[in-house]
Amino acid sequence: MKQALLILSVLGMGIAQTSGAAITISQTNNTITNTSVASNYGSSKNIYSTSSGAYVSSNDEISQAISNLSAQAKQKENQLSSLNSRLYAEKQQQQVNKVPDSNSAPAIAAARASKVALSGSSGYCARYVRKALQSAGYEFTPNPSAYQYATRGTLEKAGFSKISNDMPTQVGDVIVYDRSSKRPHGHIQIFDGENWISDFRQNSISPYSGVYAYTTWRDSKYVDDASASDRNIHLAMNDK
Image (cartoon, rainbow, N blue to C red; front, top):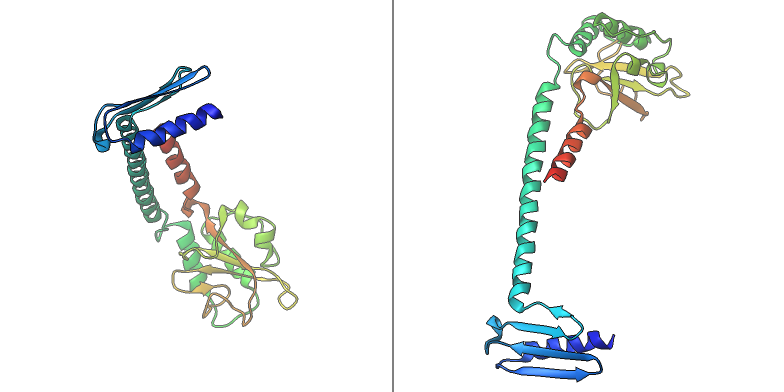
């Protein structure tokens, strides 16, 4: 501890020093020498050493080390910026590739539902949406109640993935409303690109006047695998 205090004291003396001079401080088993090789501190080279081997770099070397660290930080910043640009470009391309065309299963199912939709509810939303999905080639065991298409894993087994309710809607997306005391069978509907269709063409996303919980489902082939892109970015960063 005493040796460290002595080194710090001499460092302070070196900073205040403005003329060429040599300072030697002696203590039991330790000698600290400060040699300044210039009269101008801005360009001086102060070297601090002790008989026990402790050494403090010159001001020039410290400045160079700081410059090197700054350059490395800037390089990492540029690498991160480049990788973020790649990630954005990949996601944009994925978004283009993930939109169903008119010949895709989601679009076919939605078109079928829209074509046979009634003007008002008949109470058979599960039947109408089920037939629309089956007409597009989705295979699953029918359920008597709409809510069961989510709770029994029917949509998942048919090739759908549950997505966030906040994601932008696209053609073929399916929404399943949970059952409630007033709606014991729940509700199921499919998006045709303009409207939500069940057994009838709805005016909005919700067929109810109140607020009910629901889940959103999308054909897994058209779900953006953001986690895969993030893994690629992580691996790329580790390679640098």
